[in-house]
Structure formats: structure tokens, C-alpha cells
Amino acid sequence: MGLPKTKTATTLRNDLYESLKEASEEKTQIITHKQGEPVVLISQERFNKLLDEKEALKKMSIGLAQIKEGKGTSHKTAIASLKKMSKKWIKIIGMNWFKILPWIFQKGIGLRG
View 1 (cartoon, one colour):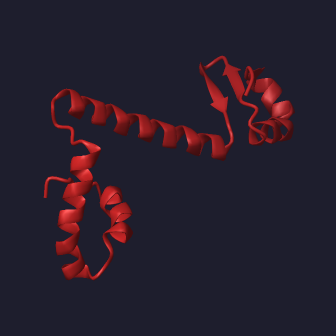
View 2 (tube, rainbow, N blue to C red; view 1 turned 90 degrees about the vertical axis):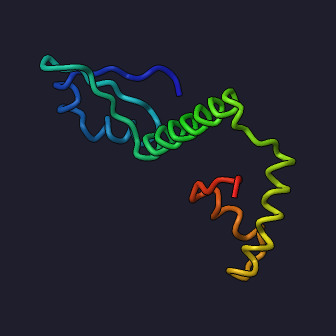
């Protein structure tokens, strides 16, 4: 990614198209101005990646905290619980448990039943 390019607000006004093009090409721009803190100009794709990374780190942090508190479940135990629960789910919704597993994790449903 390299070091971000720093510009003043005046420079940004003079070469707005160039700055937008560079930002869309993953070249971060830092814009300074007299009335406040500098701002960062990045592409939408980069912004979305940052949000995804933030969410993943948040979930990992929560998971690590739960493990430290003794609330963790081993992989072997989790799979066994899912297989056991899947028999009930198949009767209810008529699906293979592998098909509903992504839905379970997306909804954040616990494994304790």
C-alpha cells in the first residue's frame, strides 16, 4: 500500500479528479485543513475491507474472552453437538445439517442447545 500521500484542502480542490482516481486505485490520501483534524480519502472497497477486518477482530476478541472465561467448546465437542442437534433440525426443516450450518453461524445461534 505504501505511505499515504498528504495534501492540503486547497491542493485537493485543484486536483480533485486526480485525487479520487488515486484513492480508487488504493492510494490513500490524507487531506489536511486549517479548521480541524486531517481526513483520509480511501476507496469504497478499502473502506469495506476495513469494516470487515474490524468486525472479524471484534468477533475474535469476544471469542478469546469467552475461552479465557472457560466458556469455550472444543471443535470435537461442537461437531458432536451439531450432529446430535441436526437430527432434530432435519425433522423440523427437512435439510441436511451441512446446509444449515452456515445459517446457524450467521444467526449467531449457540451450540449449547
